[in-house]
Length: 286
Image 1: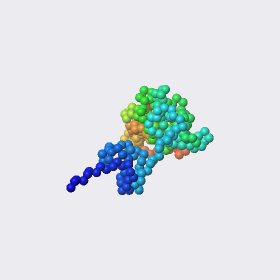
Image 2 (image 1 turned 45 degrees about the vertical axis):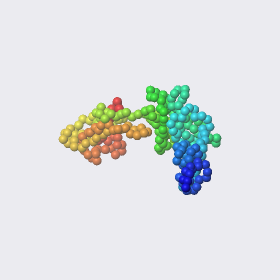
Image 3 (image 1 turned 90 degrees about the horizontal axis):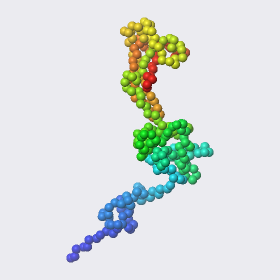
Image 4 (image 1 turned 180 degrees about the horizontal axis):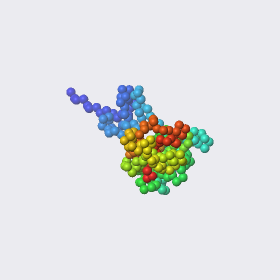
């Protein structure tokens, strides 16, 4: 009896059974199943399988901007709400582009209208302080190749991959754009720690706009002339804060006094005029 002929399955170019649809990953008619390598068609970049096993087609891409983006887009996009010339609330998109003239990375905003999104300058939407340079790569740093965004509490932080500081875009009731200044102080050493003074009566009674003079100690002053009675320690340090966060603290300066805080002599009308008070002064270099 002759052996049965080996059957070579036909290419998948016919309707598929319901059972096979559950595992369907795309069309490939160049070779029988199992012999052809995966292709972009088999990966189905624009298709997905529903829970019922059917193939769902994603909508095709369409142009969003009414005109070119005024340069090569660098990085991602960030959505927010703005107002048009009539004061109406509209959708807006913040993004960065590479300026072919200056070779810097500038920012642009796309504002939605009835026809799509129109690309405008950042200064048309945000208030930029005079002299503020928002562009990346305008200084000594290299031109970034990517810009990403983080949006928290109506604030958009633009972050580049060239090491420059954040660009801050406020998108609440008022819209402004600025460069976040890097906080480099205080240093954690004795030169940057605050000085503590128990001011004399003349400084307390005055405008208190100068560095105070240390009070002459007696047995009854806050800082006793008898150092063995100064048993209460008060420590002070300082930090700097910007729109991103808080700096690391300075070293602590400790002042020893003879009265606990609840026993200090105070002015109940104006606390700034209290006889017992300590003044912390930040070093000028910080």
